[in-house]
Amino acid sequence: MKIIPMPVKRFMSSTKTAEFVENTFFAVSVETALKMAGRPTFIMLDKEADSPEKRKYAAVKEMLYQGLCLGLYLSFMTPVKGFIYNKLSKFLSKNPENKVHIDHFNRMQDNLHELEEENELMIKSARDKFHKKELKKEAYDKILKLKESFETRVLKIEDSIHSPKYDLRLGKGAKELSAIIGSILMLTIVAPQVSHVLIHPIMNVLGFEKKPDKAKP
Image (cartoon, rainbow, N blue to C red; front, top):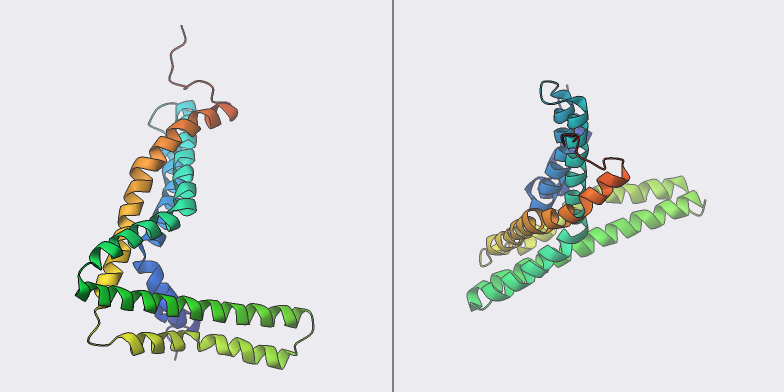
């Protein structure tokens, strides 16, 4: 009797799943998206706090703020993180021993990205040919089965480069530290400043010209 379905097993054992849960960029993105939905909802449901107009104003403002934070983060975090990692890895590589580990980690990342791109292009090409009826279903199914071996090939690459003389922790640590520093810069400095400039004009466009808690003369 199978207690855990095979699709669930594949998902839990997937390298992409592991990368997702360990990746600062993905974690912060999901957290910000949840805040964008959760905080306005909580404000609207808290009927004991202020009037409906004030709750609506606060909920819309909070949703806009979190939405702007998420948009800025998704748009600029990758180049920001890459810039910080480049500077940090160069600084660490001033030590010859560190340079060996950093270079090895970078080669591993390049190999994995190349393999991912190769796999995606193969599947996309097969799918396009199948829809155009240039590829028979049997051949298409065989190509799709090759996709299942993708994660095995990734593991082989990782096994081949996990040599005792290399320590990938330094590269991984530098990469995640870059993501953490970038997240702090984006969400505590850049996003609040940009939001401060944009939120009130957007609120005006939506019909919130005045704060509902302003007392009328």
